[in-house]
Image (tube, rainbow, N blue to C red):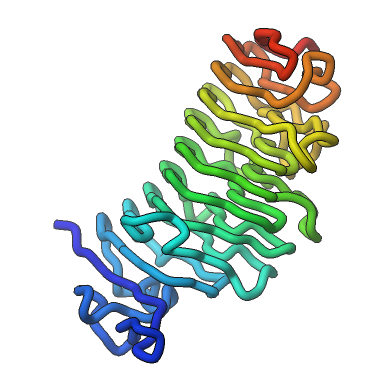
Length: 289
């Protein structure tokens, strides 16, 4: 059976009840920090974490050998549950287990790293993760796939002003390493990108992108690197991995003349595109190589 844990980042002085000496298992006895609930021995497979307030912690990792945990923000609105790391030298949270789900959380990044990272290496495999209904606002990077996690689902998220900074591979959704595998069977549905750099720079194969909206405003207006499903480490041009993807019903945010292979619009070999729209109203398929 799933257990429910509560985290309230507000202390009693601020109208909250958070205290790491609590048991975290009721609204009356919530933990105060995310570090506490992620301490080894607290969570088990299939547990749930509900939290409210502003989390400023960074450099946290999910506990080893714990899978399929649901972490959800306030039921009211993502901005009622914010994760704004105080430092940006490491991801706010690195996921190491399979099937972790993050819903209705407002992530606000720094200038040095991604706020949410899924790791796959010789020890850990964070495949099967799901991020839905979250806001990613500001900073260098939004979601990182480090090592080649597969079966990731990114659904109905907003990415706003995710760009620049000091990170070497900034972007909203970026594959920084495919050391273990080229990610496969990923689904990116209904995400929106506003004033971002490198919207989707993520090599993948046998994956599906649909109903994503890429807005050509602000920084976007000078950045043609919107969708590159062959890219690794965030480069506009590198990488030849990625194939058999399907991209449909996406608003691409650029004029037809800009939707070129050279500009970084790369869906991968043997991929298909159906009913995607350029800003000049042209229905667009697969960019020519």
